[in-house]
Length: 291
Image 1 (tube, rainbow, N blue to C red):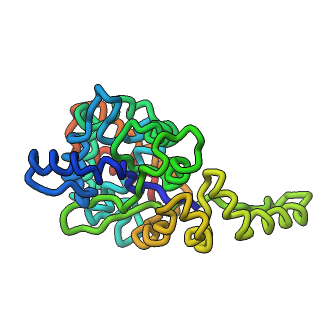
Image 2: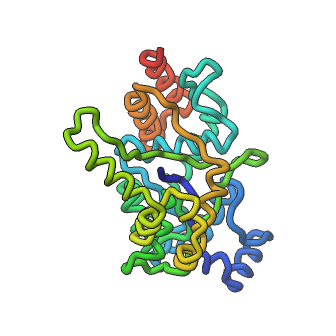
Image 3: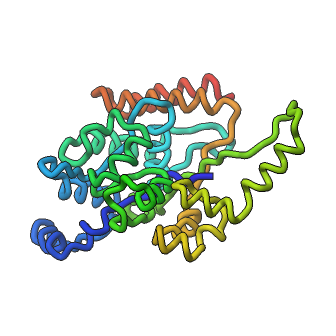
């Protein structure tokens, strides 16, 4: 299991008295971790300082069939939308989807707010760039929080915090759960050995060690572990982040549906086509296979 799309922030930047004073003088309000997407965009612009190799935010927009799909889902969810209708069919032709895609295409193309290599970054490259102190904010897998603290090459150890994602005004935050499973193949000739390994790998101690090596533990005991939280002081927040976590639709043809959504988002980023037209086209293509 892994939680995607928590908000990473450069804690020292947000807590700096000098930055606080400068931000208040410029905008007339306190610099805090953004609760809305508009505040996120404004703060990203504020911290965007290319001459210091510091950018306001990082997105992972590499066309690999999932990064932009996840981002689209989160933009939709944090505006009160859903990916499925009451009958269980994929439905993205909604106002929440339009508003979310409009915002997403706007911010990722804003060179005054976003890391210039976001179009080349998949989630790992984005996480590494953040760990090198190249951005004030990032939306990415929680596992990169551990990497920022335990990786010897990290330049932001002790300077990071994680929070829930922003949302539209009056709407709830959201996150995304994705699960990887340990399984034994039906045709395995070594089922007993495989089962012994699974029992060993999934113990509380091994879950803890996985986290200390930069992975992400799945046990509540790991999330609350005192030693872990001394090293990664926000690790206990995983439990509360799950309170707003959603899952992608469990469909056999989800890969094909995700490919359509991915293409829609990429066209939104890279062309001037109207958002409504792109969504309607994608919905038509989805309807052809989601029956």
